[in-house]
Amino acid sequence: PNAFARNLRLSKTFTIGVVLPQLHSEYGYWRLIYNGVLKAVKELAQLGVSIELVEYDRLKPKSFLAAIQKVIANKVDAVLLAPLLPDETRHVIEQYPNISWAFIDSPLPCRNRIITVAQNPFRGGFMAGRLMHLQIENKKGTLVVINTHTAAFNASERARGFIEYFADKPELQVITLDIASAKSAEEALERAYDQWPDLCGIFVVNNAVARFASHIALLGRKNHTTVIGYDLVEQNRSAMLEGKVDCLISQRPEFQGYTATYQLYRKGILNQKPDEDILIPIDIILLENIQDDNSYTLQWNGRGEE
Image 1 (cartoon, rainbow, N blue to C red):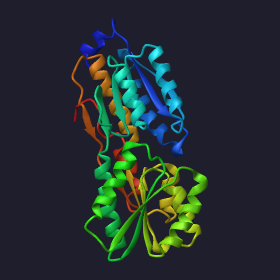
Image 2 (tube, helix red, strand yellow):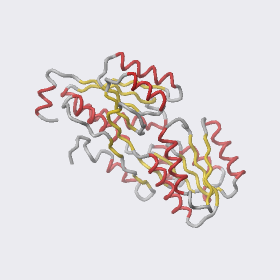
Image 3 (tube, rainbow, N blue to C red):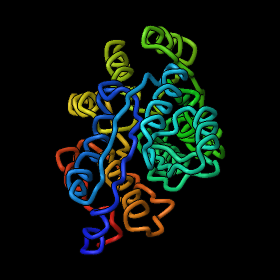
């Protein structure tokens, strides 16, 4: 924050609507993003920046639309959200073109969005494929991609990237399983092992990997199955330390929330052009470096400064 911004805040306030899935859901992943938002707002509060958080159930599109309507009704200047429901997200941002929209967690091809702070999900999935190939060495067999949120753009792109990596490797076939509920997860895994006895690797495209990894261990299959997933939430960290997960890809969730908030501040208070696309690095977490994961959480301040 600079002197110019301090002068501006005497006559200008800027409220950001933060629309996120329930913070406790998905093993607390969304709370990590919100923690980054809170850190930025704490630094910017004296400059007229405030937030309004509205949580919703990501499994219910009407809940998302109601959350958007709530923040719009309160006349926010900008909205920070994860575009997990592509059709609904496109609809609302076209409906309110005067709002500054910032996407976190996932990109989404559409008009009118101002900022995206996210990984390239296709590259993330492709990287997961490369890591899987290195882990299984020279095995031949079947790999399974598990998606628990099929509507999400980033989930489908990760699966596509993983499949693309193995497109020229005929010795390894890739099967995709869409598993919508926790109840069906165990049955789906057992059927997969029965149907493909040579199953040697499982890639979970989101942070639900610990749930599947635990059941793989219960089935006594871990020694023959490489398990890769996303996000260093506490359950996944524990699963890796217990030897149930081989590799995680981290998205720096706190950094996403912090950076997107600062970019909206740049546009709303400083009248500067924000960085439209900020790519989050694909951080690879293995057992050897899991203890060091906090060293890069907020290593860049999100303001365009080194």
